[in-house]
Image 1 (cartoon, helix red, strand yellow):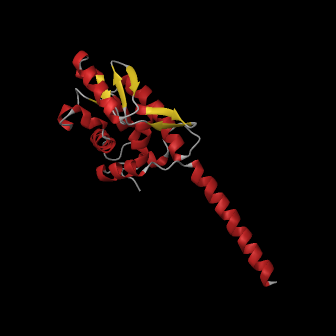
Image 2 (spheres, rainbow, N blue to C red):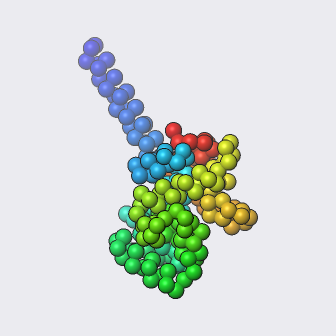
Image 3 (cartoon, rainbow, N blue to C red):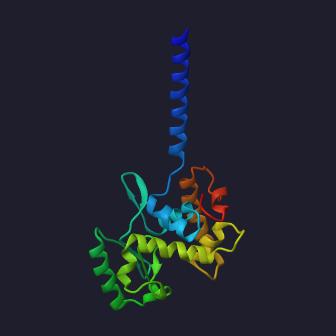
Length: 196
């Protein structure tokens, strides 16, 4: 009898572990660098990660992941294998393109509009620095008590309008994936003021 009770408990534990594993797969945990930058800025890490997926995401090994050495030059996306290559590409782009038309790194920080946030343009290719800046911008665009998707729209276009609305819709799909929900609408965690 004791053996059958033990066997039943083991089966229950295995079943519970299997259910937890399914739930864990349903929600995608932002990597530690995103969690740290978000925590320091006081924003949800899922919001920062969803923005990075939108801004610099590439398909690798069957998944979309942010790519740190991404540039957008006058609307054209460019990806590099290394930080040094991306820095060289960035310096070249800066010679021929207005800085307000160049975005860099995981959060695609605009060189012209955010000049006060970096010393050297290639600093934006440091993933940790880029995430810290992106998190700061998101925090600045968020009004207490409002849905984070509104701040996400202003992150892309502070003036709002249809471009900000389109961007919110795109990021909300990434946010739903990260939060493990099927809906593309903002999930409750995106409405929280700070990360858990």
